[in-house]
Length: 292
Image (cartoon, rainbow, N blue to C red):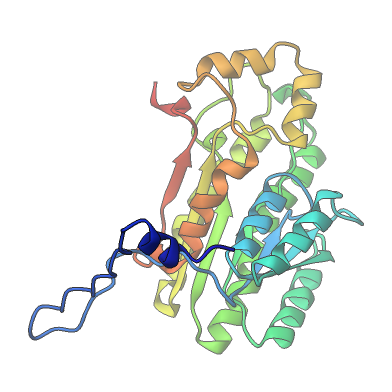
């Protein structure tokens, strides 16, 4: 390999000198104004981390240097999980999978306690587990409603509580991200999913209340509200409702739908020290869908 300094001298050029940083104004130490997005050596739980949006979040967080534990009711994660697991090592992070159903409070508590025992701490949670059922409102049974709310709302509530309980006991604080949706703000044109939409509205309200209650413990709670994302769940919607994708694309200011990776930057922001004064907020990222 050529020595660039030698080559520069041969051609009559000198290498540019590195200028020292200007001294800080007298009387105060230097300040770092650029925000810190690093998650190096932190420990996080991602529910719904076996595939889709949850897996994309887990992959990004591990690449930011964190130790990430994915919970999902799937016996085995999507094959892409194992590729993400290999990539995590290159970024000095790690990715782990646990067969955990968020409907089991006891199972959640045991799994979270095991992670804390392993690492000695837990720094946060991304509650991304969720399911959807397409059905006209008059055709829902009380059991249908209860089953969806068990995962989409109660599971989110219990996941956050399980993680917060450990943070409070250790007086460490941390950051929790609840995955809500713009569907908690609007009715999705062309899609009959009243219970799903209601559950996401409930998650947005839960965010505000947990932020109020746990702020004194140094625990921040924010909700991420994505627009339409092409995930396995949404792909199934397109199969069930002809023309739905085209309808949603027309309703979006960018004229397209999102990919799961387009929300990872926002999640890392919410988990990191960059958002240290942000809590009780709902961050809507929807390609302008709700801004018409």
